[in-house]
View 1 (tube, rainbow, N blue to C red):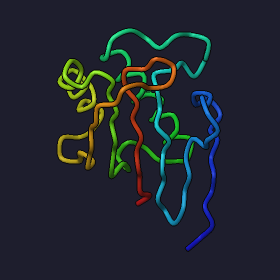
View 2 (cartoon, rainbow, N blue to C red):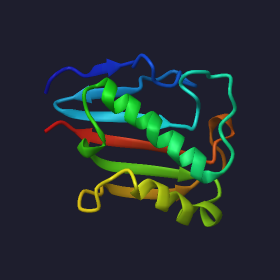
View 3 (cartoon, one colour):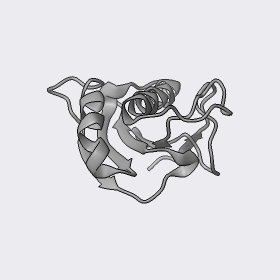
Length: 131
């Protein structure tokens, strides 16, 4: 097993806690959960509504993946965290599905949680594999 590589990606959202954007080992890329923060201006509040937040989260995840030379096509597993599961699940799914080819949907777990950092309604993390 090779030594892990810890990535902080220029242009990705500023971490809200002590973590790396991604950690890579043996071709696996573990991407830290992203919120709907603005990577260009961290002082901006997260956008209102699950649709806008889901888009921003997916775009932030894409920035991190691109920063390590990967893309959404490399994602094999996803975890989604929602603060209002009943209200937001269907709308989140519609936005989320638009980011992946229908025949290449990653494995996924979605859970309801009581709170997320920065007042977010959604957080998503990913595991990708270099091909």
